[in-house]
Amino acid sequence: MSLTFKRARHAAFLLGLLLVRLNEATATVFQVGGSEGWTVPKDPSTQPYNQWAEKNRFQIGDSL
Image (cartoon, rainbow, N blue to C red):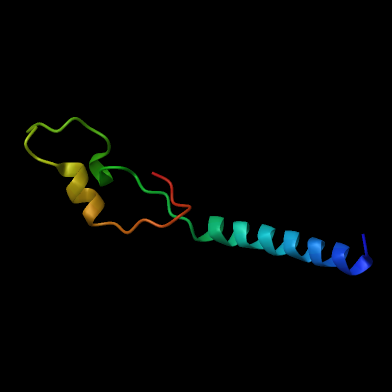
C-alpha cells in the first residue's frame, strides 16, 4: 500500500469516529410515556403512547 492510501484510510477512519461521537453528543434519551412512564392505559380505547409520540421528534441515535 502506498503512503498516500494509508493516510487517506486513516483520515477516513478518524472522520467516521468523529461523526459517531457527534451523533452520540446530540442524541436524546426519551422516557416513554413522559412523566407518567410506561403504564397500562386505564381506558383501552385511548392511545396515550401515540399521542405522546406525536408530541416528540425522534432522530437517529435517540434512545427510548
